[in-house]
Image (cartoon, rainbow, N blue to C red):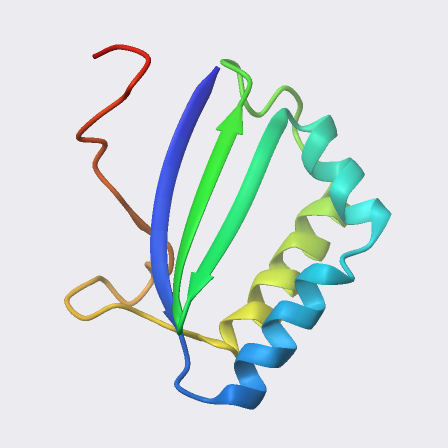
Length: 110
């Protein structure tokens, strides 16, 4: 298994935060199935205020298959929609949204 952690901020707007949460609580089964089919095993997003933390665990050979053009477009559409609620962290490139975090401790290997 491979895993990663990333962070970003939501916009400082209670309505945007509410909508972001609502979209994720009502994500379609089709979207979930597509992520699993490609090799995502776990994906968790946590929120504190407007700071988000995302944990992703995938198969070693993620993606296990190449998404179809339709799935690619749906993924792009989802990301475009989500960017309406997000705010990039200071100092990152304009194309970077979720900023990778460095692992500094793992209880399983300590």
